[in-house]
Image (cartoon, rainbow, N blue to C red):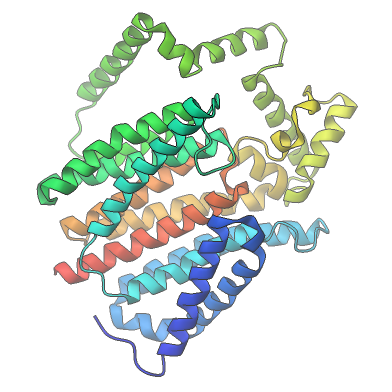
Amino acid sequence: MNKLSGSESPTFAYIAFGLLAAVGGVLATPLAAGPSVLLALVATILMLVKGRRTLQKYGEQTLYARNILLMAFGAWFFAEMLSTAINNQYWKNLDYPLRFMLGIGVYWIIRFATVRTTWIFYYSIAASALAAVVISSYQHFALEFVRALGWTNFPIYFGNLCVLLCLYAAIVLLSTREKLTLHLRYSLAIAIPLLVCAAYLSMSRSSWLGLAGLLVLVDWQRVNSIRMIGVGLAIAVSLAIIFTLVPELAISLRLTEGLQDIQKITGGDYRSSIGDRLQMWKAALLMFSSSPLIGIGSGYFQSEVVNLVTSGAVDLELDQGMTVFNQAHSEVMDVLATKGLVGLAAYTALLIMPFRLFSKLSETLVAEAKVFAKLGQATVISFFMFGLTLATFKVQIYCAVYPLAIALFAALALNLNENKK
Protein backbone atom coordinates (compact mmCIF):
# COMPACT_ATOMS: atom_id res chain seq x y z
CA MET A 1 0.00 0.00 0.00
CA ASN A 2 1.02 3.60 -0.45
CA LYS A 3 2.92 5.14 2.40
CA LEU A 4 2.31 8.51 4.00
CA SER A 5 4.22 11.44 2.59
CA GLY A 6 6.04 13.83 4.89
CA SER A 7 3.42 16.56 4.47
CA GLU A 8 0.62 14.21 5.42
CA SER A 9 2.29 12.66 8.48
CA PRO A 10 1.42 15.43 10.98
CA THR A 11 -2.25 15.31 9.97
CA PHE A 12 -2.28 11.53 10.19
CA ALA A 13 -0.64 11.62 13.63
CA TYR A 14 -3.13 14.16 14.95
CA ILE A 15 -6.12 12.21 13.66
CA ALA A 16 -4.76 8.98 15.13
CA PHE A 17 -4.17 10.68 18.48
CA GLY A 18 -7.61 12.28 18.46
CA LEU A 19 -9.38 9.05 17.72
CA LEU A 20 -7.36 7.11 20.27
CA ALA A 21 -8.17 9.65 22.97
CA ALA A 22 -11.84 9.73 22.02
CA VAL A 23 -12.38 5.99 21.83
CA GLY A 24 -10.44 5.41 25.03
CA GLY A 25 -12.36 8.14 26.82
CA VAL A 26 -15.76 6.98 25.65
CA LEU A 27 -15.19 3.34 26.57
CA ALA A 28 -13.31 3.97 29.84
CA THR A 29 -15.27 6.68 31.62
CA PRO A 30 -18.14 9.05 30.81
CA LEU A 31 -16.17 11.89 32.43
CA ALA A 32 -13.78 11.93 29.47
CA ALA A 33 -16.56 11.82 26.88
CA GLY A 34 -16.98 15.57 26.31
CA PRO A 35 -13.39 16.67 25.60
CA SER A 36 -12.43 13.40 23.91
CA VAL A 37 -15.37 13.46 21.49
CA LEU A 38 -14.64 17.12 20.70
CA LEU A 39 -11.04 16.18 19.92
CA ALA A 40 -12.30 13.38 17.67
CA LEU A 41 -14.60 15.80 15.85
CA VAL A 42 -11.66 18.05 15.00
CA ALA A 43 -9.72 14.97 13.87
CA THR A 44 -12.62 13.85 11.69
CA ILE A 45 -12.95 17.29 10.08
CA LEU A 46 -9.24 17.19 9.24
CA MET A 47 -9.73 13.74 7.75
CA LEU A 48 -12.55 15.02 5.55
CA VAL A 49 -10.46 17.95 4.39
CA LYS A 50 -7.18 16.10 3.90
CA GLY A 51 -8.35 12.56 3.50
CA ARG A 52 -10.18 12.59 0.16
CA ARG A 53 -7.03 13.20 -1.86
CA THR A 54 -5.33 10.35 -0.02
CA LEU A 55 -8.23 7.92 -0.34
CA GLN A 56 -8.47 8.49 -4.09
CA LYS A 57 -5.31 6.41 -4.42
CA TYR A 58 -7.23 3.34 -3.34
CA GLY A 59 -9.97 3.33 -5.95
CA GLU A 60 -13.69 3.96 -6.23
CA GLN A 61 -14.76 1.35 -3.68
CA THR A 62 -12.81 3.07 -0.92
CA LEU A 63 -14.42 6.43 -1.61
CA TYR A 64 -17.84 4.82 -2.03
CA ALA A 65 -17.58 3.15 1.38
CA ARG A 66 -16.38 6.38 2.99
CA ASN A 67 -19.30 8.31 1.48
CA ILE A 68 -21.86 5.73 2.62
CA LEU A 69 -20.54 5.85 6.19
CA LEU A 70 -20.45 9.64 6.10
CA MET A 71 -24.09 9.84 4.97
CA ALA A 72 -25.34 7.19 7.42
CA PHE A 73 -23.52 8.48 10.49
CA GLY A 74 -23.94 12.12 9.50
CA ALA A 75 -27.71 11.75 9.03
CA TRP A 76 -28.07 10.35 12.55
CA PHE A 77 -26.02 13.19 14.04
CA PHE A 78 -27.95 15.78 12.01
CA ALA A 79 -31.33 14.41 13.15
CA GLU A 80 -30.29 14.60 16.82
CA MET A 81 -28.79 18.07 16.35
CA LEU A 82 -31.95 19.35 14.62
CA SER A 83 -34.23 17.93 17.32
CA THR A 84 -32.02 19.33 20.06
CA ALA A 85 -31.94 22.82 18.52
CA ILE A 86 -35.67 23.06 17.79
CA ASN A 87 -36.60 21.81 21.26
CA ASN A 88 -34.31 24.39 22.91
CA GLN A 89 -31.99 21.85 24.50
CA TYR A 90 -28.90 23.65 23.23
CA TRP A 91 -26.08 21.09 22.99
CA LYS A 92 -27.46 18.62 25.49
CA ASN A 93 -27.10 14.96 24.46
CA LEU A 94 -25.15 15.75 21.29
CA ASP A 95 -22.10 13.89 22.62
CA TYR A 96 -23.96 10.61 21.97
CA PRO A 97 -24.60 10.98 18.21
CA LEU A 98 -21.25 12.74 17.86
CA ARG A 99 -19.59 9.42 18.62
CA PHE A 100 -20.88 8.14 15.29
CA MET A 101 -18.60 10.58 13.52
CA LEU A 102 -15.67 8.68 15.02
CA GLY A 103 -16.47 5.94 12.55
CA ILE A 104 -15.47 8.12 9.60
CA GLY A 105 -12.02 8.78 11.03
CA VAL A 106 -11.53 5.16 12.08
CA TYR A 107 -12.35 4.02 8.56
CA TRP A 108 -9.77 6.40 7.13
CA ILE A 109 -7.07 5.37 9.61
CA ILE A 110 -7.55 1.61 9.14
CA ARG A 111 -7.89 1.89 5.38
CA PHE A 112 -4.67 3.90 5.28
CA ALA A 113 -2.75 1.32 7.34
CA THR A 114 -1.10 -1.82 6.04
CA VAL A 115 -3.17 -4.77 7.25
CA ARG A 116 -2.02 -8.16 6.00
CA THR A 117 -3.26 -10.47 8.73
CA THR A 118 -6.25 -10.54 11.07
CA TRP A 119 -5.11 -13.04 13.68
CA ILE A 120 -4.90 -10.28 16.34
CA PHE A 121 -8.59 -9.49 15.82
CA TYR A 122 -9.55 -13.16 16.06
CA TYR A 123 -7.52 -13.73 19.22
CA SER A 124 -9.02 -10.61 20.78
CA ILE A 125 -12.45 -12.27 20.51
CA ALA A 126 -11.13 -15.29 22.39
CA ALA A 127 -9.52 -13.06 25.03
CA SER A 128 -12.76 -11.11 25.44
CA ALA A 129 -14.64 -14.37 25.94
CA LEU A 130 -12.34 -15.38 28.78
CA ALA A 131 -12.60 -11.96 30.39
CA ALA A 132 -16.41 -12.00 30.08
CA VAL A 133 -16.90 -15.38 31.72
CA VAL A 134 -14.42 -14.63 34.52
CA ILE A 135 -15.98 -11.30 35.51
CA SER A 136 -19.57 -12.53 35.16
CA SER A 137 -18.86 -15.69 37.17
CA TYR A 138 -17.16 -13.66 39.90
CA GLN A 139 -20.09 -11.24 40.10
CA HIS A 140 -22.73 -13.98 40.09
CA PHE A 141 -21.14 -16.55 42.40
CA ALA A 142 -18.76 -14.56 44.62
CA LEU A 143 -20.55 -11.21 44.86
CA GLU A 144 -23.98 -12.89 44.56
CA PHE A 145 -25.26 -10.61 41.81
CA VAL A 146 -28.56 -11.98 40.57
CA ARG A 147 -27.67 -10.70 37.09
CA ALA A 148 -24.06 -10.16 36.04
CA LEU A 149 -23.16 -6.66 34.85
CA GLY A 150 -19.77 -7.54 33.41
CA TRP A 151 -17.83 -4.43 32.43
CA THR A 152 -21.03 -2.39 31.93
CA ASN A 153 -23.51 -0.79 34.33
CA PHE A 154 -26.56 -2.78 33.25
CA PRO A 155 -27.13 -6.53 32.65
CA ILE A 156 -28.81 -6.06 29.26
CA TYR A 157 -25.83 -4.11 27.92
CA PHE A 158 -23.44 -6.85 29.01
CA GLY A 159 -25.63 -9.63 27.64
CA ASN A 160 -25.91 -7.91 24.27
CA LEU A 161 -22.15 -7.45 23.96
CA CYS A 162 -21.49 -11.09 24.88
CA VAL A 163 -23.97 -12.31 22.27
CA LEU A 164 -22.43 -9.96 19.69
CA LEU A 165 -18.93 -11.31 20.37
CA CYS A 166 -20.33 -14.86 20.24
CA LEU A 167 -21.83 -14.01 16.86
CA TYR A 168 -18.46 -12.79 15.58
CA ALA A 169 -16.67 -15.93 16.79
CA ALA A 170 -19.24 -18.21 15.15
CA ILE A 171 -19.12 -16.38 11.81
CA VAL A 172 -15.31 -16.39 11.67
CA LEU A 173 -15.11 -20.04 12.68
CA LEU A 174 -17.77 -21.24 10.24
CA SER A 175 -16.66 -19.05 7.33
CA THR A 176 -12.88 -19.56 7.44
CA ARG A 177 -12.45 -22.79 9.37
CA GLU A 178 -10.05 -24.37 6.85
CA LYS A 179 -7.83 -21.27 6.74
CA LEU A 180 -7.42 -20.88 10.49
CA THR A 181 -4.53 -22.38 12.40
CA LEU A 182 -5.46 -25.26 14.71
CA HIS A 183 -4.73 -23.17 17.80
CA LEU A 184 -6.88 -20.28 16.58
CA ARG A 185 -9.65 -22.66 15.58
CA TYR A 186 -9.76 -24.14 19.09
CA SER A 187 -9.58 -20.68 20.66
CA LEU A 188 -12.67 -19.50 18.78
CA ALA A 189 -14.48 -22.79 19.39
CA ILE A 190 -13.92 -22.43 23.14
CA ALA A 191 -14.85 -18.74 23.05
CA ILE A 192 -18.39 -19.49 21.88
CA PRO A 193 -19.57 -21.49 24.94
CA LEU A 194 -17.73 -19.10 27.27
CA LEU A 195 -19.62 -16.13 25.79
CA VAL A 196 -22.89 -18.05 25.92
CA CYS A 197 -22.22 -18.72 29.61
CA ALA A 198 -21.47 -15.04 30.30
CA ALA A 199 -24.62 -13.94 28.45
CA TYR A 200 -26.61 -16.53 30.39
CA LEU A 201 -25.34 -15.11 33.70
CA SER A 202 -26.57 -11.66 32.65
CA MET A 203 -30.06 -13.23 32.38
CA SER A 204 -30.95 -10.89 29.55
CA ARG A 205 -33.73 -12.43 27.47
CA SER A 206 -33.59 -9.93 24.63
CA SER A 207 -29.83 -10.41 24.09
CA TRP A 208 -30.39 -13.72 22.35
CA LEU A 209 -32.25 -11.94 19.56
CA GLY A 210 -28.83 -10.83 18.31
CA LEU A 211 -28.09 -14.37 17.16
CA ALA A 212 -30.32 -13.59 14.18
CA GLY A 213 -27.09 -12.18 12.75
CA LEU A 214 -26.14 -15.77 11.91
CA LEU A 215 -28.55 -15.50 8.99
CA VAL A 216 -25.66 -13.99 7.02
CA LEU A 217 -24.23 -17.51 6.82
CA VAL A 218 -27.25 -18.77 4.88
CA ASP A 219 -26.86 -18.99 1.11
CA TRP A 220 -30.27 -17.56 0.27
CA GLN A 221 -29.91 -18.21 -3.46
CA ARG A 222 -29.65 -21.95 -2.88
CA VAL A 223 -31.79 -22.33 0.18
CA ASN A 224 -34.59 -24.87 0.17
CA SER A 225 -37.58 -23.27 1.89
CA ILE A 226 -39.07 -26.60 2.95
CA ARG A 227 -35.78 -27.67 4.46
CA MET A 228 -35.45 -24.36 6.31
CA ILE A 229 -38.94 -24.73 7.76
CA GLY A 230 -38.06 -28.26 8.85
CA VAL A 231 -34.88 -27.09 10.56
CA GLY A 232 -36.77 -24.28 12.30
CA LEU A 233 -39.43 -26.64 13.60
CA ALA A 234 -36.80 -29.12 14.77
CA ILE A 235 -35.05 -26.39 16.75
CA ALA A 236 -38.33 -25.18 18.29
CA VAL A 237 -39.35 -28.71 19.30
CA SER A 238 -35.90 -29.42 20.72
CA LEU A 239 -36.00 -26.27 22.86
CA ALA A 240 -39.49 -27.14 24.09
CA ILE A 241 -38.29 -30.61 25.14
CA ILE A 242 -35.21 -29.21 26.87
CA PHE A 243 -37.21 -26.65 28.88
CA THR A 244 -39.75 -29.33 29.80
CA LEU A 245 -37.09 -31.74 31.05
CA VAL A 246 -35.06 -29.02 32.78
CA PRO A 247 -37.58 -26.48 34.17
CA GLU A 248 -34.81 -24.73 36.13
CA LEU A 249 -33.32 -23.65 32.81
CA ALA A 250 -36.51 -21.86 31.80
CA ILE A 251 -36.61 -20.11 35.17
CA SER A 252 -32.96 -19.02 34.85
CA LEU A 253 -33.61 -17.64 31.38
CA ARG A 254 -36.63 -15.79 32.81
CA LEU A 255 -38.99 -17.49 30.35
CA THR A 256 -41.39 -18.40 33.14
CA GLU A 257 -41.35 -14.80 34.33
CA GLY A 258 -42.25 -13.65 30.83
CA LEU A 259 -45.27 -15.95 30.69
CA GLN A 260 -46.39 -14.70 34.10
CA ASP A 261 -46.02 -11.10 32.89
CA ILE A 262 -48.26 -11.80 29.91
CA GLN A 263 -50.89 -13.35 32.18
CA LYS A 264 -50.85 -10.23 34.37
CA ILE A 265 -51.20 -7.93 31.37
CA THR A 266 -54.23 -9.81 30.06
CA GLY A 267 -55.77 -9.25 33.48
CA GLY A 268 -55.08 -5.51 33.31
CA ASP A 269 -52.04 -5.56 35.64
CA TYR A 270 -49.00 -3.83 34.08
CA ARG A 271 -46.75 -4.16 37.13
CA SER A 272 -44.17 -6.36 35.41
CA SER A 273 -41.11 -6.15 33.18
CA ILE A 274 -43.07 -6.63 29.94
CA GLY A 275 -45.94 -4.50 31.25
CA ASP A 276 -43.57 -1.60 31.95
CA ARG A 277 -42.24 -1.81 28.42
CA LEU A 278 -45.72 -1.71 26.93
CA GLN A 279 -46.54 1.37 29.00
CA MET A 280 -43.30 3.07 27.95
CA TRP A 281 -44.13 2.35 24.31
CA LYS A 282 -47.53 3.91 24.90
CA ALA A 283 -45.82 6.95 26.44
CA ALA A 284 -43.48 7.19 23.43
CA LEU A 285 -46.42 7.16 21.00
CA LEU A 286 -48.13 9.92 22.98
CA MET A 287 -44.93 12.00 22.77
CA PHE A 288 -44.70 11.31 19.04
CA SER A 289 -48.29 12.43 18.50
CA SER A 290 -47.47 15.74 20.19
CA SER A 291 -44.53 16.43 17.85
CA PRO A 292 -44.54 13.98 14.91
CA LEU A 293 -41.99 15.68 12.68
CA ILE A 294 -39.04 16.38 14.94
CA GLY A 295 -39.99 14.80 18.30
CA ILE A 296 -39.74 16.25 21.79
CA GLY A 297 -35.94 15.99 22.06
CA SER A 298 -33.88 13.29 23.77
CA GLY A 299 -33.35 15.30 26.93
CA TYR A 300 -37.06 15.64 27.64
CA PHE A 301 -38.09 11.97 27.49
CA GLN A 302 -37.60 11.26 31.18
CA SER A 303 -39.43 14.36 32.43
CA GLU A 304 -42.26 13.77 29.96
CA VAL A 305 -42.74 10.23 31.30
CA VAL A 306 -43.25 11.75 34.77
CA ASN A 307 -45.85 14.15 33.37
CA LEU A 308 -47.74 11.34 31.62
CA VAL A 309 -47.72 9.17 34.75
CA THR A 310 -48.89 12.09 36.89
CA SER A 311 -51.76 12.82 34.49
CA GLY A 312 -52.77 9.15 34.43
CA ALA A 313 -52.11 8.70 30.72
CA VAL A 314 -49.73 5.80 31.37
CA ASP A 315 -49.48 3.31 34.22
CA LEU A 316 -45.94 3.12 35.62
CA GLU A 317 -44.36 2.99 39.08
CA LEU A 318 -41.88 5.86 39.18
CA ASP A 319 -40.34 4.67 42.44
CA GLN A 320 -38.45 1.98 40.48
CA GLY A 321 -35.78 4.60 39.77
CA MET A 322 -35.81 7.26 37.09
CA THR A 323 -32.96 5.64 35.15
CA VAL A 324 -35.48 2.98 34.10
CA PHE A 325 -37.50 5.58 32.24
CA ASN A 326 -34.82 7.59 30.45
CA GLN A 327 -35.62 5.71 27.22
CA ALA A 328 -38.56 3.90 25.64
CA HIS A 329 -36.84 0.48 25.70
CA SER A 330 -37.37 0.26 21.94
CA GLU A 331 -35.17 2.05 19.44
CA VAL A 332 -37.99 2.77 16.99
CA MET A 333 -40.35 4.01 19.71
CA ASP A 334 -37.64 6.14 21.30
CA VAL A 335 -36.64 7.64 17.96
CA LEU A 336 -40.26 8.49 17.11
CA ALA A 337 -40.75 10.13 20.52
CA THR A 338 -37.52 12.11 20.64
CA LYS A 339 -36.66 12.78 16.97
CA GLY A 340 -39.93 12.17 15.13
CA LEU A 341 -40.16 11.17 11.48
CA VAL A 342 -36.87 12.91 10.71
CA GLY A 343 -35.16 10.70 13.26
CA LEU A 344 -36.90 7.58 11.96
CA ALA A 345 -35.57 8.31 8.46
CA ALA A 346 -32.06 8.78 9.88
CA TYR A 347 -32.31 5.57 11.91
CA THR A 348 -33.40 3.65 8.82
CA ALA A 349 -30.42 5.03 6.91
CA LEU A 350 -28.12 4.16 9.80
CA LEU A 351 -29.04 0.50 9.38
CA ILE A 352 -29.84 0.03 5.70
CA MET A 353 -26.98 2.01 4.14
CA PRO A 354 -24.14 0.10 5.90
CA PHE A 355 -25.92 -3.22 5.25
CA ARG A 356 -26.17 -2.47 1.53
CA LEU A 357 -22.55 -1.31 1.53
CA PHE A 358 -21.36 -4.67 2.82
CA SER A 359 -23.66 -6.49 0.40
CA LYS A 360 -22.22 -4.59 -2.54
CA LEU A 361 -18.64 -5.03 -1.37
CA SER A 362 -19.18 -8.80 -1.04
CA GLU A 363 -19.70 -9.06 -4.80
CA THR A 364 -16.08 -8.13 -5.51
CA LEU A 365 -14.23 -9.33 -2.41
CA VAL A 366 -11.96 -12.35 -2.14
CA ALA A 367 -13.04 -15.11 0.24
CA GLU A 368 -11.02 -13.97 3.28
CA ALA A 369 -12.21 -10.38 2.93
CA LYS A 370 -15.85 -11.46 2.61
CA VAL A 371 -15.75 -12.64 6.22
CA PHE A 372 -15.51 -9.02 7.38
CA ALA A 373 -18.38 -8.05 5.11
CA LYS A 374 -20.43 -10.76 6.82
CA LEU A 375 -19.35 -9.44 10.22
CA GLY A 376 -20.51 -5.98 9.18
CA GLN A 377 -23.91 -7.25 8.04
CA ALA A 378 -24.28 -9.32 11.20
CA THR A 379 -23.52 -6.23 13.30
CA VAL A 380 -26.33 -4.31 11.62
CA ILE A 381 -28.79 -7.19 12.08
CA SER A 382 -27.89 -7.74 15.72
CA PHE A 383 -28.17 -4.03 16.61
CA PHE A 384 -31.57 -3.91 14.95
CA MET A 385 -32.64 -6.93 17.00
CA PHE A 386 -31.21 -5.43 20.21
CA GLY A 387 -33.14 -2.26 19.40
CA LEU A 388 -36.47 -4.07 19.51
CA THR A 389 -36.45 -3.94 23.31
CA LEU A 390 -33.77 -1.32 24.06
CA ALA A 391 -32.91 2.17 22.81
CA THR A 392 -29.33 1.13 22.09
CA PHE A 393 -28.17 4.50 20.79
CA LYS A 394 -29.02 6.17 24.08
CA VAL A 395 -26.23 4.11 25.65
CA GLN A 396 -22.69 5.48 25.49
CA ILE A 397 -20.93 2.21 24.83
CA TYR A 398 -23.24 1.29 21.94
CA CYS A 399 -22.78 4.73 20.37
CA ALA A 400 -19.09 3.83 20.18
CA VAL A 401 -19.30 0.11 19.36
CA TYR A 402 -21.68 0.33 16.38
CA PRO A 403 -19.90 2.97 14.26
CA LEU A 404 -16.45 1.68 15.16
CA ALA A 405 -17.39 -1.91 14.25
CA ILE A 406 -19.00 -0.89 10.95
CA ALA A 407 -16.05 1.31 9.98
CA LEU A 408 -13.49 -1.28 11.08
CA PHE A 409 -15.07 -4.13 9.10
CA ALA A 410 -15.47 -2.01 5.96
CA ALA A 411 -11.83 -0.91 6.05
CA LEU A 412 -10.47 -4.38 6.86
CA ALA A 413 -12.53 -5.96 4.07
CA LEU A 414 -11.07 -3.56 1.52
CA ASN A 415 -7.53 -3.86 2.91
CA LEU A 416 -7.53 -7.65 2.84
CA ASN A 417 -9.12 -7.73 -0.60
CA GLU A 418 -6.36 -5.52 -1.96
CA ASN A 419 -3.56 -7.47 -0.29
CA LYS A 420 -4.84 -10.90 -1.28
CA LYS A 421 -5.30 -9.88 -4.91
